Length: 470
Picture (cartoon, helix red, strand yellow):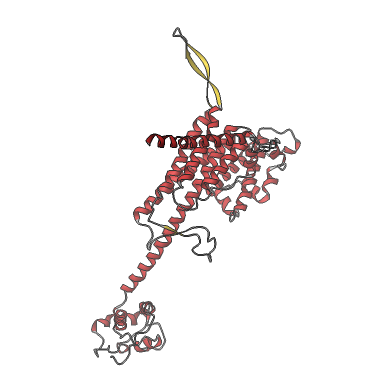
């Protein structure tokens, strides 16, 4: 029986590897055909096909990651398996480097050997490490009890009801949870900055397509407009103040500004390096001034990327990615870009929790202050509050919290000794209230209104105790 059982399981054990191999073959056939399976030769370049494959894979795995929670195991396995398929292409992108060879007689001679291209040799392991850090960060939120999310369909009356809303216990996160959340944010921020740096470096090494250059205006001033050009070329230039004067209220406005800045940088760089023989590119601006403007524009562009992470690709970036033929650059750019987007997404969710915690803390602090204000009432107000508590349920008026606030705010009332009548026990006002009443007279002696008795004030607010007790 055991032999039959083992024999029956053998095909199942071989089924998964065969399935993976077939999937990998289909994936690479699609890449070689440039995503065109019709055979008409209308596909894109291999570099763009690889870039699209990594982007689409990330969208299918991380596209639904709209909360702080571990990635499901099936999607996690899919990501690790298929991203390794796509990254394996870089193993065959090599360059020659000097090496040593030992002959049979023991002598050494220098020869040229192949190794993985230098940028891939350092970039791919770094991106894999950032990838693992992000997934580990999300795995850390397993069974997180410091906060929770309201179901997506819990309330359809609010805006963006389909986005999970974070909820915290009264008073917000504990000190330990708050510290841990900030640590997770710092880790994600490191991943975000590193992936942004790699992506920016790769994009800077990509060639600018001629189609993009042909679409540019004749000079940087035309590209930027009079207002932006004047701000950048002004003697007293402050990049931070410049961004404050720009309209960054929407993503569209930010991208429009970014596209203008990048276009002006391309124009100024080409003029500085005399890459255009066209008279339309000539200018009366000196080389030193143009270099200064280009450096200022670079600073503005860097501030935009830091202040608004997760922005879509600019017109220049899209043009570079579309016309790029370098497969190594394509893989590095797309891999770093999807990690940058995921890190920015996780950072946003962490900030949502920290913002909700800040709101909860402020609410709790406000309640504590109210309680403290009640505890610091004058003896007269405290005595009036005790009278209200002694009433029978049948005669006690509603709205006791309102009474507390009104009596606590009554320190500015002007009282005399005669204002205080006897309480329900028939006793006159105690002697220890004298100083408090005299102080009230001194503070409010400038008020020229008719003095109201204590009973009249209670009657005015409908709070007088009943004359008879049951």
